[in-house]
Image 1: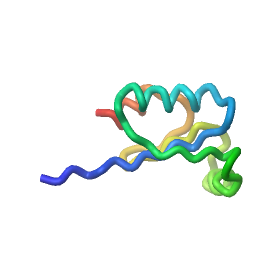
Image 2: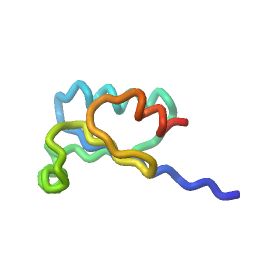
Image 3: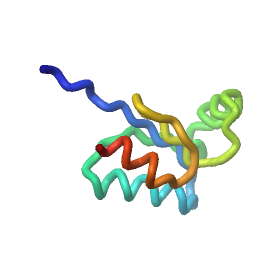
Image 4: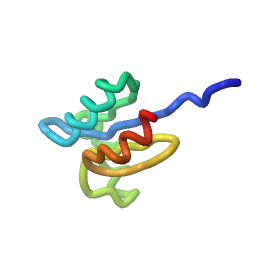
Length: 79
């Protein structure tokens, strides 16, 4: 039986404590993720704004999409 590979993207920015906490949580649980830093990729910032996001981090996965450091939602990803 093939497992569906989790696609996790964390949108972050420099000096964002909640962004660092999300990344640390995922690393500590052995979950790989793709990080997009909006300070380095301004077009990603515009895309997030167009989608209605006004704060960071934004975490997108196959299962959930949310903003901020949300251990309850992160646990759904690592389960």
